Image (cartoon, rainbow, N blue to C red; front, side):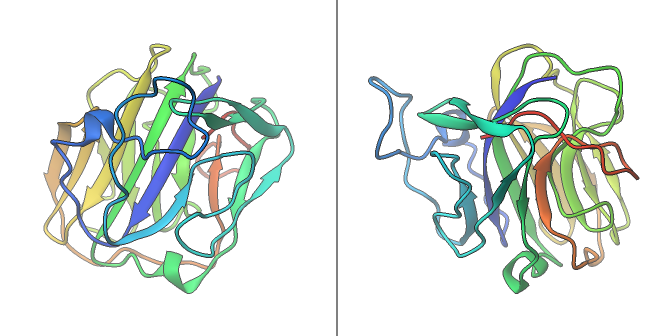
Amino acid sequence: MKYQLSLHLRLTKWLWLSLVAMATVCSSNAMPAPPACVSAPSGLVGWWPGEGNANDVIGTNNGTLVGGASFAAGEVSQAFSFDGTSGYVSIPDSPSLDAFTTNITIEAWIHVNQFDEFPDWNGIVTKGNSSWRLARYGSSSVVGFSTTGLSDIDLAGNKNINDGQWHHVAGVYDGTSKYIYVDGALDASVPATGTIAQNDLPSLHRRKRRGSGTPLERFD
């Protein structure tokens, strides 16, 4: 499996339905004729565009490339690229990444060439296996949004993202419901209440199997 993505993490729900289909934020070294760009939204907690490094361009949660992680062409400019065996990006635990208890939005651009049959639950962005995580749902071809501590833990999407195309995916919790959006359209939702559990684990952009440390492949 190879995939690319860029991501934004926010503390509050942001229903960007009019924007998400072209939600790439302008890059200073974007390629000629890039997709339409929009300004970064208010309330953004972290943004890792993968422009030659793993730095957080909004906050101070800089990441580190591990193993076979590198860079490749992305939806705009560069993206993280993973080798499928040992590559991932690790972001140290911090108070700002432990503040997502009653609301959160996780969004990413991803490009999946092909999911392997195993391992399942390939992570896109995860805070370990005991907090919040945006990932492949099981061994399917759809997005899953998991939140330990809520009345609904695992929400599965419906749209196939295992098609070799760029997709914008997002998981949202607003205190009363959970949502998955794909390419600006609501893909799945479920009522949910409670507080998202927190941990002291790093945030990872990687491929992983639930309950193990198997790394992932590619990422923006």
